[in-house]
Length: 247
Image (cartoon, rainbow, N blue to C red; front, side):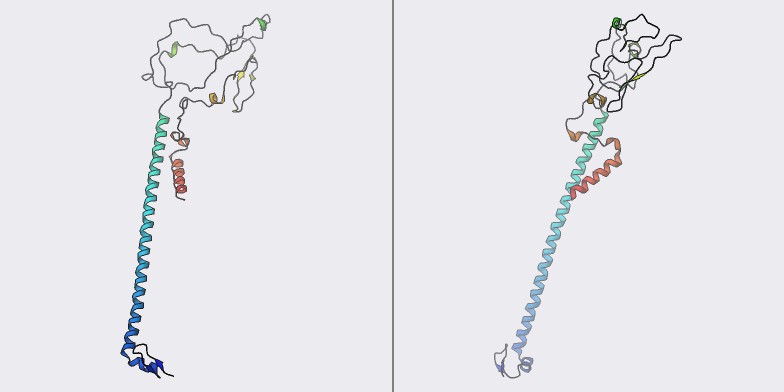
């Protein structure tokens, strides 16, 4: 059976032997192979171009993320520095050195007589009746505040209420009465049972009050509750925040 040659278009019984001698068939075959090679080269170049484009896009995303993380880290450092500086600024003049504290003139009037928070009755005074004693008026609301660290001017001329009384020689020491501890475990000790609640008018804010935190910052970001844990703990937490931000 005769077969047709693709190069010259004639029919031959032995097409294989004819193709080995046909120049047109050889050119056709060589051209087809060349087109295949060119197509492979074109596809390979296209793949390289797409890969380079993807790598450039990935590098741009990584650079943008690093810039964003650096900006956030700098912002956190500024917040920590600002909160640390705010803790150094005193909110009260109490405890400052005398050269920074306004000079208060000494009192000219004679101080009023001292009175005790509760009447003290000695065991050897049977003639004194409890109803004859005048109880002190209720004390105003008190605030917890740190004691001064430096000597204040005219501190020696001030009058402070007495907390103890010396007993006469030979008098037995009265027993102590402890109040019920509060939620913080704080209790008071008296030599007589108090006639009123010593913590009347006090709130939780009074027990949690401090000279450096009387007026906390309104903005939550200006506070630094981790300042007491040290710089190592704060840096570790900052790195954890950065890892969480990247995820």
